[in-house]
Image (cartoon, rainbow, N blue to C red; front, side):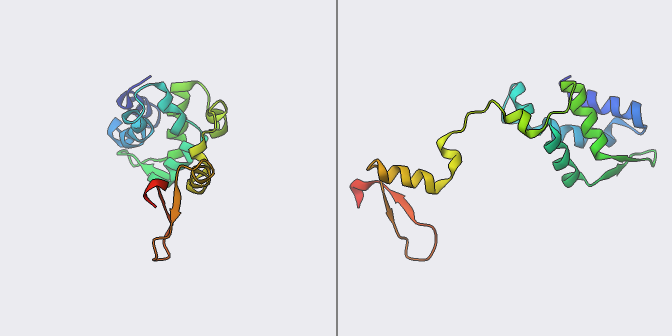
Length: 138
């Protein structure tokens, strides 16, 4: 399934109310399509972590137009199960992602640049982070 409206229609069939009651939650789960326009977008929110984030964004429950309280966790679980057939953990989603040097943070990048003679650290003089500059300009 690939359309938030279809997810919302199924939610309305299951819990009552109208599809519009559920559409924002389903749009949230599929919002990553705007940044990763293939099924890899599901690695980001289609997992147990994404469901927990949805609860933080929308609250623990919504009240649909029939006045029924529906838990956001259940809406998220429905979405992920419809798309994937299971609810992976974030660890499951990232298991085969290779660790890249930039993931170690700025200090690691600066250390590597200095060790390879590609830059120098120049104090900015205002107790903020130091700036990495090209060694030829120092």
